[in-house]
Image (cartoon, rainbow, N blue to C red):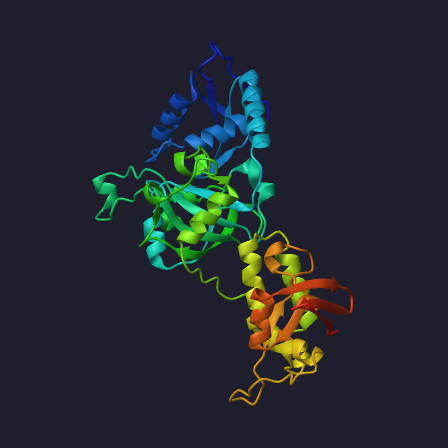
Length: 392
């Protein structure tokens, strides 16, 4: 549809025309004046500023209450803004970690976290949509809580800080939210926009990591995290994330999707590796622990007949003590640490079954992996070479 565009009269204001179902409603000298008028026109509680911005600069229409609204501005103004956004996106690089900006005046994050719900979607900044992958991590960040006494309705005012750790479950898609009850204006949740599915894996509502207590050196401090950013999401500095992560204490990642005792071992690990190929080190480490301690580990232990493969290579007694179920106690170990992100580090050809003593020795002792071929590992353990055949 070819809609009329206003002409800018100065270098400061960005004129706007609002259209309803293709018909011109009103022309305004600036974006703020258009957004405020639009709020009154729709009888909204909040100014739909983001909607107007997306409309005038990204040609996005907005469907609400059966009507379609469109927005235009001076074409030179629009092109200059797109160039500015493009330069900003080029300066920002994906890290695998995310800051999600939450305004409690619009989204009742305290109510959501106290509800115990763990699955949700979060609207993201459009130009970052191709940077999200399953297995990345993010933090829910709250800045200044500007709710009035009436809006707080007995709630405590939130201090600026980190209120949750979340995992990215998949890539973003255009969708609405099913959590309208947590929006101060329920119409906000009905807006179709890019949203990424997330899982809350650490709820900090009762013990948030406050910015005033966060000790970040100037060389790694993430300015967007601390100062805020006019967007829904922004990549988070990895070193900053590590400090925040350490402050959180123990994180219970939870279970993965494979709970069938009859799973195919190689196929399952291959699927896990493909699904988490772009995951950050912390998530890959959780996947590793799932393999080492869960159903997959049990199947691999049966393949090695519950023997310590190092003891067997040294011609020692390979069996440990028996458990009440009659099985010998044994542990599984990834030779190449999963956290190093090598392709194939989750696969069974990177696994060993070990007695508790040799498991600790491989982690903390005088041990060096000097050969890793298709069919064997060769270790140097206390100056002795030990060859361990891989189980296929």
